[in-house]
Length: 107
Image (tube, rainbow, N blue to C red):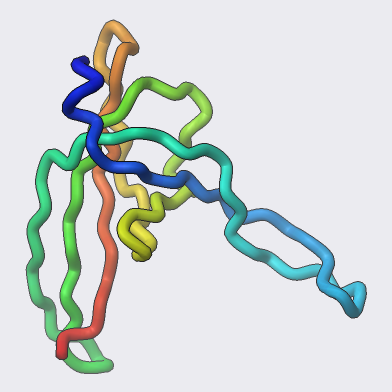
């Protein structure tokens, strides 16, 4: 994997439990790692949902291999959260593809 292709910076986030200022446990997204990534594919498809039209954006990121990534995490890219649907590692464990989806209400 060539470093020059890793143009974008993404953050991996995990759902963790913290305690707010009132002492109440709260579940929040916390940053786990910041990685450089290549944007492989970006497409959008509209679906009619009960709330109205919703646009699902499918994005595939290629990044260096990191063993601790799970489907329970999400990717923050360009200010938008992307839920990880699939992790496809290279057989040599040099890089991996993160196949993600994000929903945005249609304008």
